[in-house]
Length: 154
Image (spheres, helix red, strand yellow):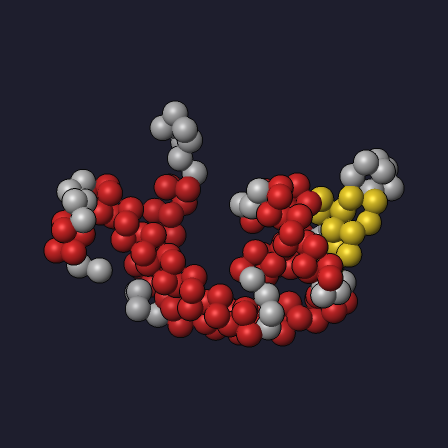
């Protein structure tokens, strides 16, 4: 995407131009990376849930939704599909039976352990066009943008 095509869309604001470039890059990288996950029958959200459960342990659906930035309705569908395929299981919380925790199964752990090294390799290949310094700067800028509060204070 070049500046000329952005200008043709009426994007004269530097912030809008950079935002469009950020989304464009993000969506292209996502599409390429999630192609690998799709080969194993997973969506990006499903992989995110398996990743969270593998590394953090059992979580409520609400916590998982918050962790991977999905709505309550969407996270229910994601977990339903993972459960249907035997990758997770739901269990009532023994301390408070109103809450249901989601656990990764052995089948889910096995799949995650198989995919994660391939995913890491794919991410590294995607980021290879950036120098180490550029990666650090991009990471810093992403954190700065992502942690901005509504009132503009960090």
